[in-house]
Length: 475
Ligand SMILES: O=C(O)Cc1cc(O)ccc1O
Ligand SMILES: [Fe+2]
Image 1 (spheres, helix red, strand yellow):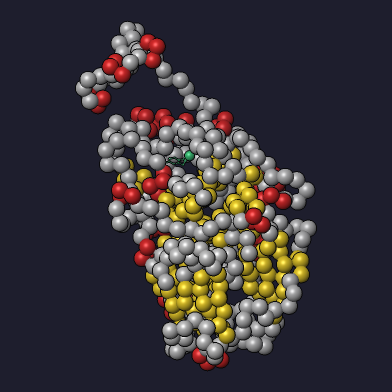
Image 2 (image 1 turned 90 degrees about the vertical axis):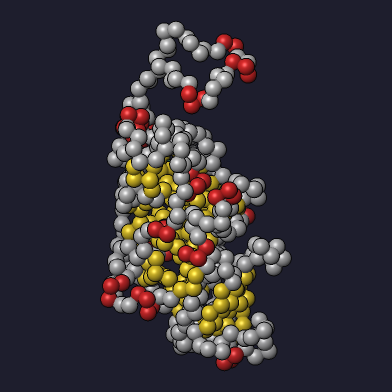
């Protein structure tokens, strides 16, 4: 049924807050009061604990949820391997070959829709780093599906948290903890282990996923920005408890475990959680609510000011993965080359485009549903046409990115590209570098009389006495 044919507000109910201790009960009285695991939980429910961090994780990191359900999650048959030869999303262990580590800048044409498959079979690992079995690294997926998951099938990834970025079509995600409707320009996070099924109420879907094998996403520190802006905690939405009473039908439970699929059977619905409370739950966020910060004087700031969510590595300030967006915003800087600077980064940068045009690439090659990867130290920056425009533009206040939303998965890891990402998808642009940066012309003009040229590196006393802003330009 198209989204427009049911009442969205009726079907999907949310509670607001990031990292908030939530509780929800579909039936009044289903949540035990003052105890997590009473001898007999209310209404004959089973109490079950879902741990998203180790029991002993420090309080500020600890994430767990108590579920009160009709039957425990363990009531299923043994898992059997499924599609072992064809399905593998472990970056370290790709079938028949190692992952390709490529120093080149890479760009992909828009990925195809595929109406023949469901959510599980629409997942394509395009790039990644690390190994889910060691709980290190990330997987970057393109998804494209056109079929609902089977009516009686549920899925979970044991490998990591899914950060889902829809580019086309809506996802109706029924999770154990409740329902989420996630549309383009919104994102959601489904933490490791949470069972869900995906329906496509508006037809085919396509988008991007970052699977985080280590830790969980959190909001970035705001530092001198203060206590508000960027993604505000109250704009994150978690579902409310929503259950079925079905102990009499055959279900398939499929898991992705170390990159491989396994399936088990059970004769009751996995969506039988009547009440829950805790800190470990799926959530969604509308990117339109991001309160963007930027320079109001000069120079182009680091894109970290656009971080929606970050997943820290063990080293403070260095993310295993950042999710960064480039929303519509005003640029007002004076005497500044306003697009991103030319740069090389020790972090890898995978970018996608949900809609519109990204302001750093106006040459036409970076399109919605496409992607780019500027791996560790791969030199990149505005393409020649963007450079030409930006270095000659009259610097009035200007709105950029209107109707547009680009994003970046930035990671401290070198990300390898899979066989699918490099060849099978057949979307890699052969001439990305040649088109973007080879046309750049040198503009350097050595001054006739080298007024300020400093020999042998100069001394600290050689610098101008006045503010640098008053020194005339060289050329
Ligand atoms: O490469 C890119 O387009 C992403 C990016 C944007 C920006 O504003 C600054 C740095 C950066 O890597
Ligand atoms: Fe970059």
